[in-house]
Length: 205
Image (cartoon, rainbow, N blue to C red; front, side):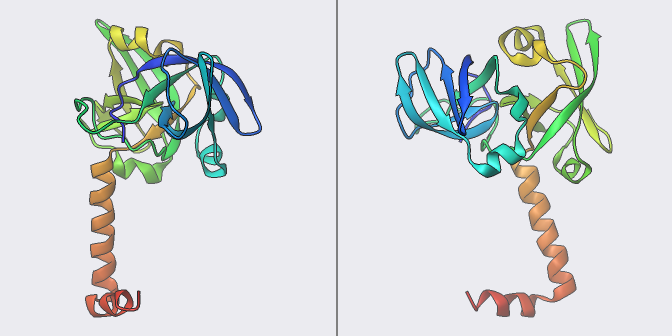
């Protein structure tokens, strides 16, 4: 589990044969979980000032692979007893979004990001969302996207300062919104199928 607070921006050393090697001040151990641009990955090798993580097929299919160059966000998994900040992040990227508009404000910048319509049911105004591993608050949402306001500190300390219109980003929607939607889907399915039938199926497993 993660919080969506970036530990540092690591430098990409190489990516080959599904192994991503990063140069960073953070020193993980082999087997540790670490979020790279919001995707939970496992450390498979530790070198002098660097470490490597492996990307599974499903991970490569879901994330914006073109961003595994230059610098990336990293956050190590939470440990028992850590102070909880940000919001609950699983490191499971739901989909890739696209920056469609960038608008300056007096004390920050608005980023408008579009995502595939099926995922919009999990995006709630004033709710939480994770963009490339960064914990953020949704200002408002439309049918196919949402607006975020990024303050100067976040622009300076994350990759948001490098985003342009057309940039693709990893998106993890709010955990609780997904749970609620899943419960409601099951409830609606139960109405159509009948609870007796569902209980009979459950008894078989």
